[in-house]
Image (tube, rainbow, N blue to C red):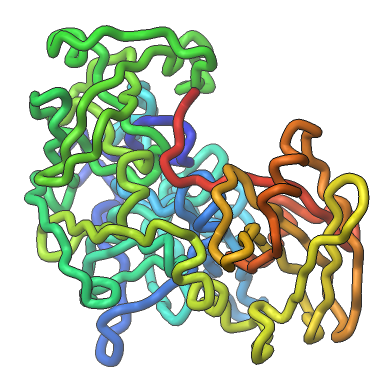
Length: 438
């Protein structure tokens, strides 16, 4: 699903002979030959973001007498999208020529529109350099789609904060649960058991929530309840919303997921699957597709596990022995929520630091929220006191359970995504594990 907010698949359908379409429309991206067979790519905001994302550098073609145009792009890792995509404005700046055709359509939220896209000469993802990546034109955002993900297999590991492309062993040699899939590689269909009845769903890392056709849920005898807050599905049709859900006992293979919320989709799909398997059910696992099967490995119960490796996934972040992320933080006494931070090293770029509370036993406190502190380019030894805006009803809980602070994650500040409002800023935030629509 594109953008993690739509609950729909973003799929390309060919509706005419190949001669009516650009010759390159179905071409896979070109991976480097020789050398590495797997690549580890940092995820952006893996613990708090809505949907998995990676930072890429996209480049246009080299032209005689003119500098090559490259720019940073944020791409949603979207297994529900058949192809990668970039916003139209990005393709224009790169000088990538796009072609439109009514002989192919893009389906999104049950709506179809004519396909349009082009070939991006280069896409860099960490150490991986891809060539000739076919990118559809998207209205708003960039997407890393199935064309890249399925070429060598993939895994999302939110504890490590990485997307792994290529065949790799399960994290920490844990045994992986392998489930059969259908439709691979064009689609990845997984069977989910809902109240003892099997429903085929599209594995969709762009879907924040698991969504099943409302008619199927009703036929299975599951009552639907009205959601307090609906979710818009279409920019063109405001009436099309996710507005109903049901609660049911859920199993994924032999994995008992307990009683969970399943959101109802108001439109029946035209394909064989009946909805999307989303991150709300998958977020308890490191998961991905390898050798034609869905692999699941249980995540650690606490975000404190794996924090050191997660922080160090960014090569440009300074290393300071004994000070993870090179930023020390402590709670300041007094009214409100205040935090004193001290930079142990200088930094040329701005970062956001995610802190959790630990109790007196140095275990991560059972709190539903964390705090995030953003800083512009820091100077070694620099100290700041940051006020954290927090609702009054939350503050007593924080003071009671917060004996100290521990760094859980670090992410670069992207001006085009969420720029800093000053030299330093703070806020409270929530984790993305087991999201609910209401």
